[in-house]
Length: 137
Image (cartoon, helix red, strand yellow):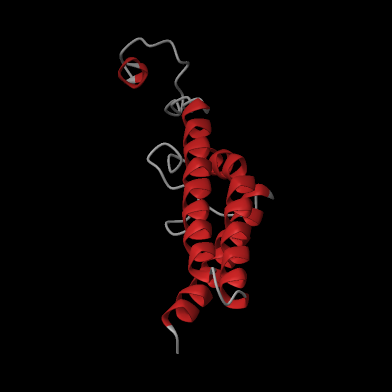
């Protein structure tokens, strides 16, 4: 099996994976996980922040995946110039996915921190008896 063929098939599979992740993220169907989507410190804070970050990054991920998929197919089809298509599409897929991840990270940073929960029976007066003053900093 030719080396370019193997790399082209890997690029097609990677493109499909990135596209599916992007569609799930854009449709807000990507659950908080450790493997797929935007996984920065800011985006992993909680499920809502993860959802916002990945919704923003979803469309660029779909585009990146389609670029990889198209590049892999072109590499398989083209007799000459296949390596160029492979390199350009691989670079494009990586750069677009990175840009989407950066957008998602910035969106996660914009999500406000949740308010700390008050202990049961606390009125939130910060009197010091229940530790609310310590929670609010």
